[in-house]
Amino acid sequence: MNSPLSLPEPIDCLIVGGGPGGLTAALYLARFRRSCLVVDAGSSRASWIPRSHNYPGFPPGINGNALLVRLREQASGYGARLEHGRVDHIEPHADGFTVRYDDQTCVARRIILATGIEDTLPDMPDVDQAIADGKVRLCAICDGYEVNGDNVAVYGEAECAISHAVFLRTFTDQVTVVVHGEQDACDQAIALAEHYDVRLISDRVETLRPCETGIEMTTCGGQTHHFDIIYPSLGARFRSDLAHQLGVACDEQGGIRVDDHLQTSLRGLYAIGDVTLGLKQMSVAIGQAAQAATAVHNSLEPKPWGGSEATR
Image 1 (cartoon, rainbow, N blue to C red):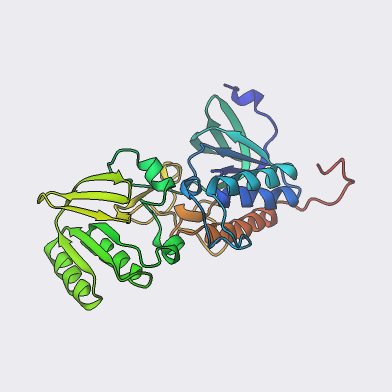
Image 2: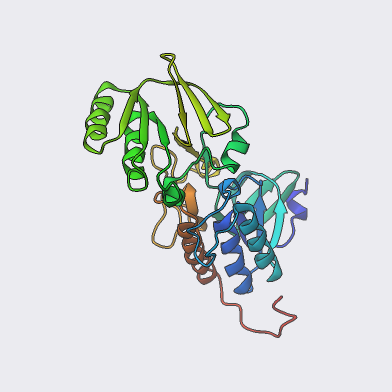
């Protein structure tokens, strides 16, 4: 590891996370002729997407990994550095922040956290393939339109699962919600299910198994059901460990609080995308990336034109 005395010159901005938000921030900063480095652990939620049909500009839809490839190519084409690694420590430095990732250390004048969230996936065999096949889905806002009359089940804690089930009634008349939890929440779920013509199973899921026609579900009560699509509503974890490490303001679930410029409660540290509070969508993340990158650029001293070679 580099010693503090041998650290290279500070970079203008380090971006933690190489999903759509982080890569868009890098694209903007590189085009602002700012030195920027993206450190990406390779766990973007976008990589789970078989095909997104609501990402603007791709009428036939686009695979999540294919989108990431395009964004990496675009950002690096303007000079952004992209490195695989995991940032495990950040601390304040006279020039901004000292950042440690894998066996390397660098100094960054500004940092953008684009670390996202980690979905709690169902305990079932071949869950990765089931997601790729569209049998297990993680975001009804993203792909509810494609449900289009399918036989769908949502399961999880009553309060969250029932709201997802009601939302999916927009796209199909075959919705089942499998709920458990606090009695008051279950009673409310029963009332909502009756009002919106949602089938309700008051039990816990025992096993899930992919089958030729979709997913086979067995409940703790011993009943077996078959569905075309399952939406697990099991929650997610904010990847905000670095923010907590620095004492940054977060909500009780771990979502990072930011101001109108996407700056956290620590000056020079910004956060964008799913790790912040609000709607978890790629289009939201890239919009926030543009805002944060512009705010970072404006927070640094101007960089007057000095010829193409001097500014690259």
